[in-house]
Image (tube, rainbow over all chains, first blue to last red; front, side, top):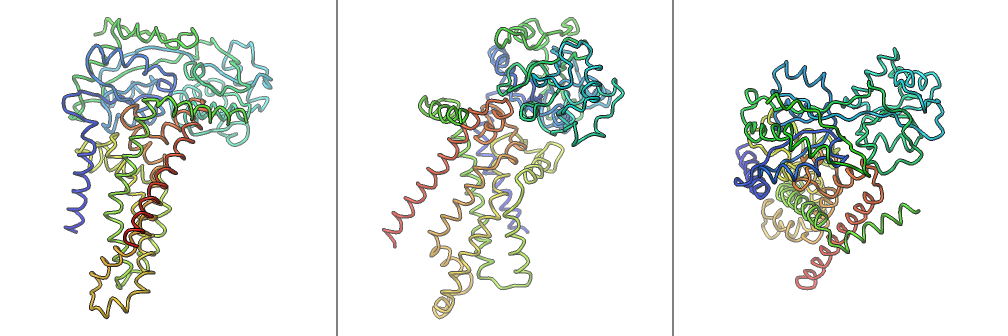
Length: 278
Length: 234
């Protein structure tokens, strides 16, 4: 037992040495747990260098679905969380997991589907009615099925339509249980409808036969928020640099960096922080 | 077909330009997997040798277990290591989650059973062949184990290569414990997964082609070393 313990502490110690070049004391960094939609759309690669230039703080982004991203924050494995499920965010602030939650920006969801439009929803304006039509015609629909922010938004829409799609799971309703990109790949492969955030859609490279079938319904509004992991629960959280990041992204400078990010001339995210708050 | 052509074009384009990002990712992939195999060898060879020459109760069960663990699902290993290293877990105070060190630990856990199980088989075969000879020289089991480890060293290189192949190819474990952080924990396999999720399939496949090429190069290098050593000590 003693020997194995010594062996393991040796292994750990050597691993720490190996980790050392990545974690030099002089260089400050924070870990931000965020969503696949912000990472895959390229937003972070656009705005983080600006932040680093201003403050010298490096931001390391771990991109997962919002469900997992929130969980990483609750476990204390990151400093800041940047996600898009406002209801869940506010609930977790109330439960004491996070502090300093602020609206940052929004974009919108769109329903994409095959050009042939088997459910006949192209041109419709009402997302709820469109989903009802997809349900009625039994046209294939792929769902994230991964407790992400997009998944939560999709389930709210189905609920509003009075439909429980999970009853048809494996039939016309197909839960991929994976990220937005993987779900779009699946939808593209089987010519299915799906709900996606516009950012991921615009930067997605494997559209195949898919087009935007419905957009512009205000219920497709997608709010992103930022918050700090509660240092009272996790004392190791880098409160100062974490708050510096939150302050910056809410500032005029940060909001401008978000608004400037475009793909093919299209703006992906629309800053809407109430900067007067801080 | 068109996609495949584009994948090869992407791969050669990246290699030709010696893309800085690519070099960084390739270097980290090699560092992590080589370190993991090194740790796994330090733990796995003695374990394999002990099982090969030792005779004790429960030996058979341990061998069966070890052989079965060669098939450990990476995503399960990743999850267990994640829960151990998480701030909310027992080793959280070290703060090494989402660092290359965490990835080395996860891959070492994956590779150790492979190295232990395969070296056990190799050394046991040699033990059968040389047992009488070694005993007549008055060798104790411990000495015999070391002698056999040395005698079978060329075969054990192949064992390490099997472990390296497993480490370099897996994505499930490093994705969870590394977090695929750009410039910090992004390796070949997680980069491929990311590009796939972005729908850039040719670039993803291009990276895949480079990864396969890299593994071939490592194996060729090992083979050269082996042959040179054979000629020298044969």
